[in-house]
Amino acid sequence: MPVRYDDRSESAAATQQTGRTVDQEEVGRAVERVNDALGALNRNLKVSVHKDTGQLVVRVTDPDSGKVIRQLPPEQLLDAEVNIRKVIGLFVNDKA
Image (cartoon, rainbow, N blue to C red; front, side):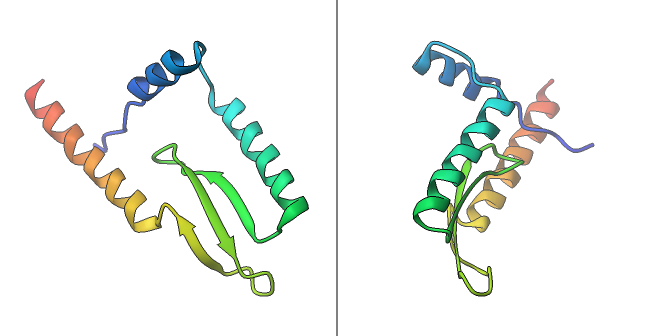
């Protein structure tokens, strides 16, 4: 059974820093506003939220082909984080 990352600690950290909680819809709206602002300046930048880690991802694309030229953080790093969280989840489940 796959283990899903529990982001309550990140949510608690966000609450501690800002004094309020932030939900996924609010993050999505903020990302849309950033993309709209970037579109006025440069159509080659896109901001999104990685579905498995919740991290912001910035992609630089080729304006002609739409191909991703650069991504921060790189996809390999995001995949590694997901895999590490799964391994940690397995250890936690074994101890319980």
